[in-house]
Amino acid sequence: MTDRAFATRAIHAGQAPDPVTGAIIPPIYQSSTHVQDGIGGFRGGYEYNRAGNPTRSSLEAQLAALEGGASALSFASGLAAEDALLRGILRPGDHVILGNDVYGGTHRLLTQVLAPWGVETTMVDLQDLDAIRAARRPRTKVVWLETPSNPLLTIVDIAAVAEVAHAAGAVLVVDNTFASPALQQPLSLGADIVVHSTTKYLGGHSDVLGGAVVLGDDRFAEAVKFQQFAVGAVSAPLDAWLTTRGIKTLAVRVRQHSENAQAIAEWAVQRPEFETVFYPGLASHPGHEIAARQMNGFGGMLSLGLTAGPSAARAFAEATTLFQLADSLGGVKSLIGYPPEMTHASVRGTALAVPENAVRLSVGIEDVSDLIADLEEGLARIAAS
Ligand code: PLP
View 1 (spheres, helix red, strand yellow):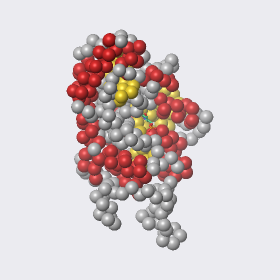
View 2 (cartoon, helix red, strand yellow; view 1 turned 45 degrees about the vertical axis):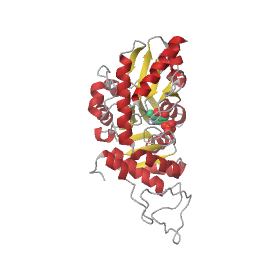
View 3 (cartoon, protein in one colour; view 1 turned 90 degrees about the horizontal axis):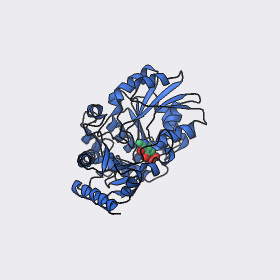
View 4 (cartoon, helix red, strand yellow; view 1 turned 30 degrees about the horizontal axis):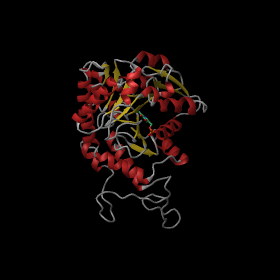
């Protein structure tokens, strides 16, 4: 399957018809355990659901093929995946260099869950390679980056950071949730491991929570698999199956998300109501060149800074109709959020705070003229209020 193009892999990898019935789509194996042909006589290697489930296996094969990885493991949420990965590869006393604009939950996991266990973390602007070199310690084991970042869509050069991480004796982990493998495949750019909140573009329909770890090689496979088995934050069969279904349309969905977001960004730069438009598809975005080099498109996320300030931004987030006010991203339905009080509330007032005048859009795949009309109506509503 590795010789096939991305959209083909997304549909066929791990998705062979059911060998017993010929069902074109592999069924949901909604079973907690598997009968044994004598003690230890496991059919297909399956014993008990926490250790392995055929539906989860089919998702894991699909995920590995999408990212070009040696293997993948699927979890109940993105954070469960991150936790299993970090506990699998780190030991107390180890050190992590973390991008200073990564998802707040990743920061919370490292500083509030793994710190008491003895893992140390330094936040760094990963656009500054010298800052990464300077942050290195003898026990630095991981550099963790996210690009494009949330909510300002900052772009980090994955290949350049991979080189610095490797020279420091660390592995590079990339959270590829925002781009999805349809737009960016970090393992091919030198990263060692990819993580996902499959809740977002991979699931794609805002109807399932999940996470994944994709390993570029076998170094950590056993250690992370052990965490998955020993702790048990696995994806349930129905959730795994919904994610396999979402992934089959990933290529076309992400193309439309990107096309719609580009059109909205180009509309927004013409509007005096927005003083800043954060979208890597605009030539004026500071990360545009790197994004054009390492991505196949610019994605469906953008943020808009309102000229009239924070209270206008807050009001705008509540003034649209098709763009519905909710956390999360990456689904077919458009969403709007006010990061300072929603996704980034926990870092408000800290060095990690985000601009108070910006709203974040997760641009869906509705007709873009309706989406722009909705934003125009929202602007008119806040102007009239
Ligand atoms: N990584 C990123 C970039 C995210 O945006 C999120 C959730 O919003 C996560 C990881 C965590 O994923 P989950 O919510 O599925 O645990």
